[in-house]
Length: 165
Image 1 (tube, rainbow, N blue to C red):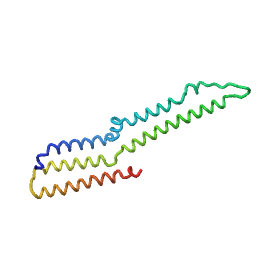
Image 2 (cartoon, one colour; image 1 turned 180 degrees about the vertical axis):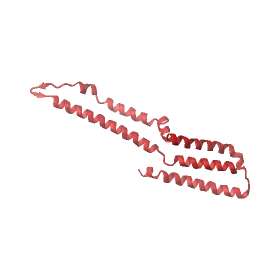
Image 3 (cartoon, rainbow, N blue to C red; image 1 turned 135 degrees about the vertical axis):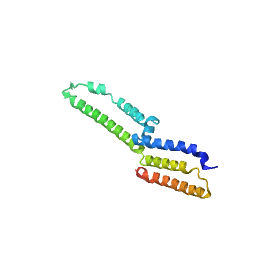
């Protein structure tokens, strides 16, 4: 088969990769997938709401102090209210840290640049796909192998900091 037989596939690949570059610069594509497909933020919010339901805020806020055998319950009630506020604050802090963690892990450092490289590779392929000589076949073997090597190493080193975390 000749390379010129696959120009339609190369065109589709070039179109998709340039679309990924555009999407990546406007909003992180991986974050969109985390939000829309996997719904990580919705799951986190659901778990937080379940945790907050275990704290009976209405009952705690409705407690009033009274005296039993000369001992006032106001100190214990205020202590309970402080514990409730601290627990709610801890839950909110944990929710924020989980959301930040998901955003950090979804933020790909090298995705847009690799998509741009793939687009430029596809565009170049379209321009020279019609040339069919033995030298071009050797050229394509070398270029494809170097491109795969470049893509894999760029992805590895671009995401290395996230792997080490």
